Length: 68
Image 1 (tube, rainbow, N blue to C red):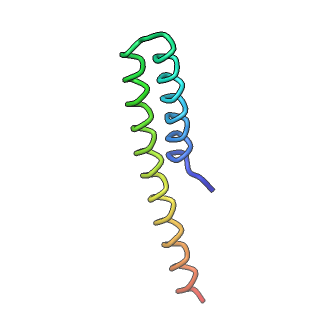
Image 2 (image 1 turned 120 degrees about the vertical axis):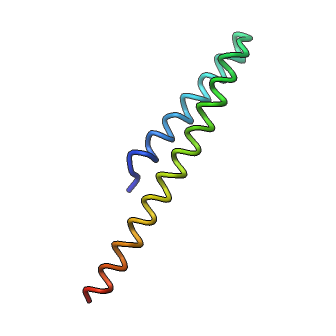
């Protein structure tokens, strides 16, 4: 199950792609650049969330193995 960082990262990626599209359609380079930045930020946040989730799962699995 995804954590809040992964979900927020995906939302930021989508927001960035929308801004890029609107910026391209309107010729607004600043909006396009903001979109690129939002998308990259979303990529990083999603990646960090994935790492946190996987580490948590590994710790839980290790704890379960120790109990048994």
